[in-house]
Length: 158
Length: 434
Ligand SMILES: Cc1cc2nc3c(=O)[nH]c(=O)nc-3n(C[C@H](O)[C@H](O)[C@H](O)COP(=O)(O)O)c2cc1C
Ligand code: SF4
Image 1 (cartoon, rainbow over the protein chains, first blue to last red):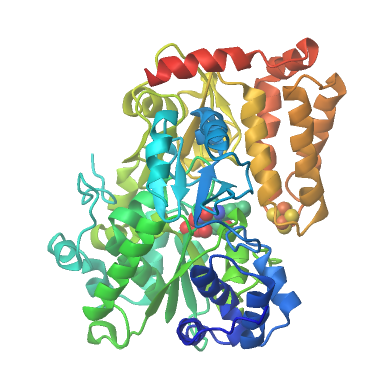
Image 2 (tube, rainbow over the protein chains, first blue to last red):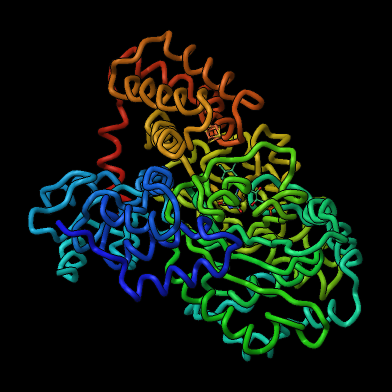
């Protein structure tokens, strides 16, 4: 496959981040974010593009990319479900929500539905413990979850 | 009862615009200090206020600032730690979403006190609403001349940027946060040098928690004595406490520092959910030691919670009820720590996953009595002084106190080769939801 070049728009956004820091490399996480925003995930090809632009070796950039759980180095679906698996949600019934999602979507944590619609991931504490259990889909937070609500929530994401 | 930090939060939680915020006295503290209170004097007021860091460690805020050299060349940095990822903690979210201008005002006061010229809000990825409110508020503050060059014609300059993270609990540890802001892995740094001398990009830097920063405008406006008097004890101010778990009304409330654990649970959280009894609580997030029934009258401040064998931490309480399995509860915590260990030093990277595995076998009925000794061994060898940063000792706190207070539960799992809470859980969840 031919390598996807960074787009003008991506370069503009990355350059904006570079302006805020004393040297280019310091903005590499921002650069990864920009690319992921546009391409859903950071492929090896994308990583190489960003590394070249940031004047880093791909290995160096990958060591940063793989550290952070919200930089996706494997393909994800159109929508990413982050289910809180931390203590308050666990106490309030996280496991039921998890089992129900596994069943409804036919996938386990780390997997993507065959129609590419959802990827299901566990996530540490979403910081909404008084409204547990909770999950996020893309940028939307859902709290005080019950199994009964899941179908309606999922149906909003095509 | 005064609630300086939360009194302007609307019922619907919509943040005040800059104009609305100014109408209720917003940015008054910035005007006041820029008109003629020196940075050293601001530090003195904050030292006298006895404000202690709300990020978990409780270090004196004014004292921490005083190590920043005031005479060195720019740049110097001030960072708001808005990475809030301690499981069970949801207090900074409220301040970030509902009172963004209060945070910015506090950041200007802190930055001025150390003569910083650049500031960052380090915000965790999941706080999307906060990202919007902060972005908008920073923009408004620039427009009104509270940020940028020559603020209110005082000659003082301050830039402010929002940085959103890409996950990992370790980004909240202040030196790991600095590495992350520099585009590196979020592993901690050796201290010394302390960030006050060599922080972000090797320059003097202060990292303060969101709630700490939000106290500052009120301290400047009302004075150190007023702040001391807000509290019921010698640790000053108010505190945003929270309670989560199976209580009637989980939530967060700004209350005088030193409010008892009993009052939090029984009055503010409405008591335990029907049919459940209190068994224990983590007073300030996942990395604090359990308190139990004997501790219900402990005053929730730094000094008294420490005397009870735990830490105030973030002051957001997680409740363990009598129908939830303590072994499963602790296993959930250790799973979190095993996953979030930055991997930099061996005891933590290897030890915590081992702890999780042992807990897992105990919970599933495959544990041996010797395993309890093995767990105790870990609480000691991953304790203070044996790992590179405070993460691993924090991870051991709920385990060591759990082994002490819930020993019979561990032993019963091992002897009966099963978790008897599994059946309970089903019934209880039904009754809570109905
Ligand atoms: C593993 C770990 C995670 C932390 N996470 C946070 C956090 O999310 N927010 C925070 O304010 N402090 C956090 N801290 C504490 C910070 O290192 C630091 O002490 C604090 O931000 C200083 O601010 P303060 O003096 O205002 O409390 C964490 C510490 C450790 C060891
Ligand atoms: S104690 Fe854990 S989190 Fe801290 S440096 Fe060592 S491996 Fe990293």
